[in-house]
Length: 215
Image 1: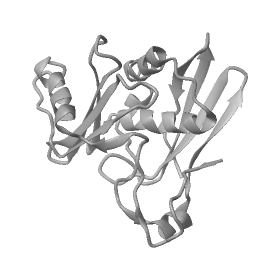
Image 2: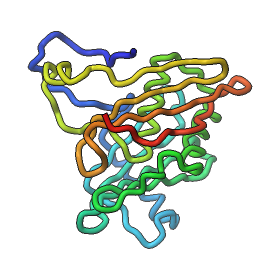
Image 3: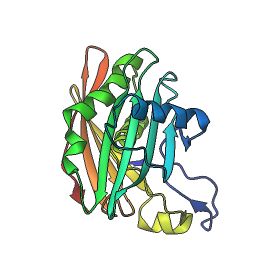
Image 4: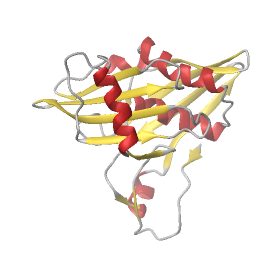
């Protein structure tokens, strides 16, 4: 089992789950997100403006990953994740809905997996077991399952479970189980995802994402 490192021993410390490399959008991130709107990727829809998060990848500095969220309609929450592996690769768009309308099949959608695998292919990334768990968390973020944004006391988080998932390996395959404790409106507060990766010719590829399991 792989535990997320904890900082300090003060159980009253306020913490929140994050993705490795996550930060609030700066001006450049917003401008990148707006490329999806100006290029017609959003079709007739407008970018939501409730939150904007960006991910910087240490293993692929050229990549842009920006996720904007907001309300599409009454009781329908939407997130758009705009991705580009390098300056010369196309923009990719992943859309997620929550609330009264949920597109659950997006986790195992071939186009969404292809967007993620493009990052792995371009980078030639060879992650350790700890980093495999981070990859699982990154993919779930991209398809609209970010970690819980609700700040918690460290002591409370440890009582519930300070383990974010685990990694197991068989010949040629790596299985990553990610525990997602999410707040409404995007998902169930207790869910578990199983992602299967295959190593082929010195590169890694996400092959499948099993349906959500509620704990």
